Image (tube, rainbow, N blue to C red; front, side):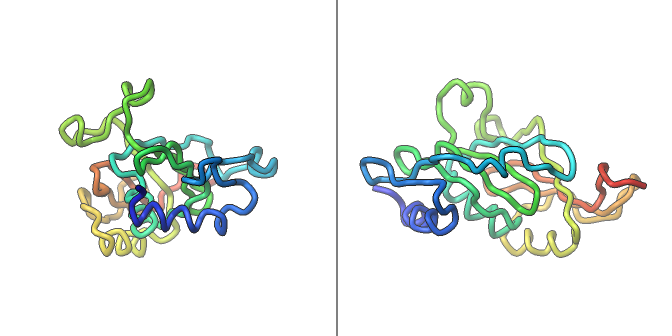
Length: 180
């Protein structure tokens, strides 16, 4: 049986994603049908690196990342046992992908921070227009601030925080793609 959060998420998918998803044959979830061509070749403001993360509770992570950082679901593919096989979340022109941690080929190479003592070996830096407002939103949602918001020697203003499962996130106004 799906959790209340998963059930709410599944009810909102048709509204959020229109014709790109359809119910599974067993009626338990939603599956991605196709991606419109215009989004496949969409130009971005910078590089095309998309962070990919695994969470023990991906449904809760989707909710929290929305509340704390403003991410909205673009695509969510539910899996078995209340899990998420794949999700794409967007905030402006930034995308992150995530799924429920599982013991598959990718899962054997990438662990959650909790699985390895809270250590991370990489993190996302995301450019935001107003880092102070973004910081306040993250704090209000319960983000663990690990580097307070401050002006940086290299330019811009930034802060670093951890989400409830320990992933490290960095947000700031310094944009290396911007022209001088």
